[in-house]
Amino acid sequence: MPPNVKKVVLAYSGGLDTSVILKWLQTAYGAEVVTFTADLGQGGEIEPAREKARLLGIRPENIFVEDLREEFVRDYVFPMFRANALYEGVYLLGTSIARPLIAKRQIEIAEKVGADAVAHGATGKGNDQVRFELSYYALKPDIRVIAPWREWELTSRTKLIEFAQAHQIPIAKDRRGEAPFSVDANLLHSSSEGKVLEDPAVEPDSIVYQRTLSPEDAPDTPTVVEIGFERGDPISLSSPVYGGGAKRSEAKGGERLSPAALLARLNELGRANGIGRVDLVENRFVGMKSRGVYETPGGTILLAAHRAMESITLDRGAAHLKDELMPRYAELIYNGFWFSPEREMLQAAIDRSQEFVSGSVMLKLYKGNVIVTGRRSPYSLYSQDLVTFEDDRGAYDQKDAAGFIKLNALRLRTLAMRNRNRR
Image (cartoon, rainbow, N blue to C red):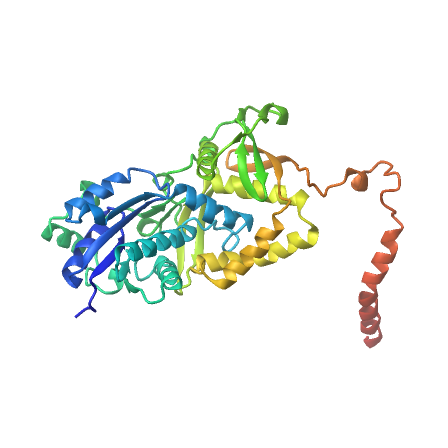
């Protein structure tokens, strides 16, 4: 018999899997179910999940549907982009960064309604089960966690559908057959994996890509934009200028936007120019490799712009240290440790580095490419007087380089003399 659970908060999408989980929790545990549906910008309608939960017998006061797009971008996506985080040098962590926010709201709702358990629909093979549950325990260590895919005997799509039919759970016609691949999406990205994508040697079909044009089909002329930054976060975006002759002066006058609105606008620009596609075989921390196809149009633009902004505002030592810390920071997010002291320590160091990362960056977007064409900042460390090929009027004494080189060469010369004497 399952442990006694009186009330459980379920992360509920309204789809087949979580609808089956909802009914299974009621039958297997005899528990009162509270549903939580988060709008993170995944697209499509969110409100139908409310109606679906009601049809499955959930009382209105136990149905939570919340728009978390601004919080998602402001408090999760933007802090991650201050670090220039990339997992294994490629993946922009679009799915990984969404899980801690969903888990946080589940715990908050559980405390509000007096629930003694939370549940999710992540499978027993994937990363998300770990991300959800590490976040749950970090925020409420005594919470009971129910992971149906590790407990039930509904091990196939056929069994899920049979269970749904037996319990009068509505099934969309297009869900009765095998879906060609699995999709997860939010305002930052979409990811597709499984089934037709499982062979990493086979090129994905065009139907896999839902958020970007093919670079081959993107316009033959570039789009020019300027992104404004303040303390490491993007705050404004100019109206785009189209055509090969577009110049910086034409893209001035950036409009200040909320975090979610700015990312949504960048997504539109990225989509139109075929930007942000990644076909990746990644190392899951459950011990296997998996193939995923990711689309992160706005995030790809933002990463390039942020690095360009840092290139003129960060000291060399700080910039290089950030690059050394980044893989560890990205791995913590990928592995589900957003609410860990080590991630918070790294975040504090990263945020401290962003004090002067303010200004604007000019970009050309063209057939899958993000091309930085200019950057400026009131806090720029770039000095034309120092780097000029013309007369620098004493700004830099080239003779100083001789002593620097000799001191750095001393150990190399000593090693070389020793090695020469051994021959």
